[in-house]
Amino acid sequence: MGDSAPERVRISLKAQYALRAVFDLSLQPPGRPVKISEVARRQGIPQKFLELILAGLKQGGFVESRRGAEGGYLLARSPETITAGAVIRFIEGTQSGRTRARRGGASPFESMWRRVDEAFSEVVDKTSFAELARSWQEQQRAYIPYWEI
Image 1 (cartoon, one colour):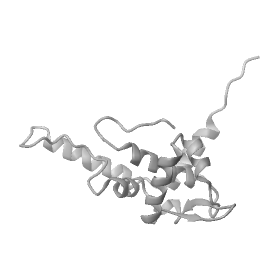
Image 2 (image 1 turned 180 degrees about the vertical axis):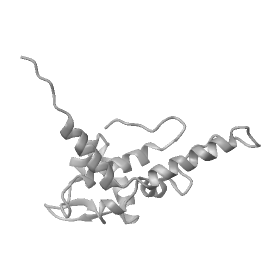
Image 3 (image 1 turned 135 degrees about the horizontal axis):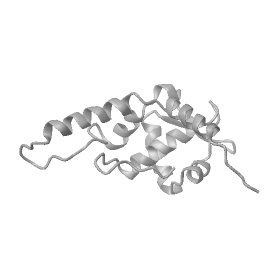
Image 4 (image 1 turned 90 degrees about the horizontal axis):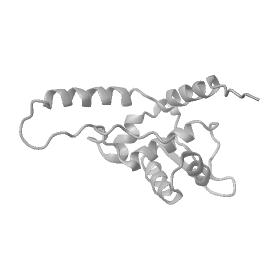
């Protein structure tokens, strides 16, 4: 899942990793804690960085942790109720993940960039992790490798 945000959208690597971590937890059976090392391996996130991200997401009420041998992280609430926009805004602040082409003074492009911001928000605020997980799983099931012997 090496997808990165388009150049203009400017979502930090930390926010991209947070999205991938919440997505990974969305794919797990409800109530089953997942070890940080498993999420880090599957999502290609450095484990130490993931630990910091998950600690922040826990403070934000997105995930919870369980201690012990069978412990780990799991979603704090249903993936239907968590949107990509909520995670991005929590990690980067309220104006995050949006275009920032404004460099002082008026611009002939200001109205266009405002519409881009609105379109971006419209998409991420209506995209739940349950929807992302369903779509991804359907894509994976539809993929049938072609083997020639």
